[in-house]
Image (cartoon, helix red, strand yellow):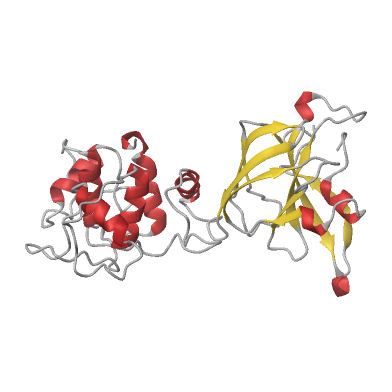
Length: 325
């Protein structure tokens, strides 16, 4: 690169202490990446599937006599490939690549107010592939960067929806680093998704399902019931919520229709929901453009009894963005 010394080279030269390196493996984190000569985190490393190789983020900032044009200042990203026989590493002949590949050395500079989605296609996809890098602001102290990603979503059809869900604070993942996009959404998880998405806070003390006392989602379930979005899982008594039960696509339609106050059934007519108690909800959801069906490209069916995956739920909620507060 024409300006400054890349953080990885500074690290190899001993100018950056290991304590100033953050290894990112997933989740939602907001950090400040400091430029050369400033205390703090000076390099973020995202592991790849190639051993000893990774993608780096660092801060390029004009300081002192090292004047850098404004267009070259920002968070820079590079793919570092190494050879490490016997655990001793050095750069390959190709060494350090700009990321994304950039003949003009500008494509890999992300400025405040801009985003970069890690999607390396050069043969070494990142374990955290699909990570969203949002540069929120910049100053001489460094760049404030929000990292949004999960280690298991890089190849998911729902990558964009999942990143949106995490960026909005609606999901925290299924553990510290993963989202589990193919896992089924439970009714308890669905309650948490909707409570966060809608910003629900009220909880009626009179509402008390008999089967959620040991659930981590008890508070979310009671808020959802207070808002009239759920009625329980055992009609007509409806004194149970079944928090660990997977959400079916038909149930999900009912949740979302009540959550967003949808009323228009339009002219949608799926071929497999005529005997479903959720037929009206399904048609309202489709008319609103929140669902497209379950058998693309024809999409003539809805599959009301099929369980909803976490990735699919991300897509449903992302399409519902216009209805969210």
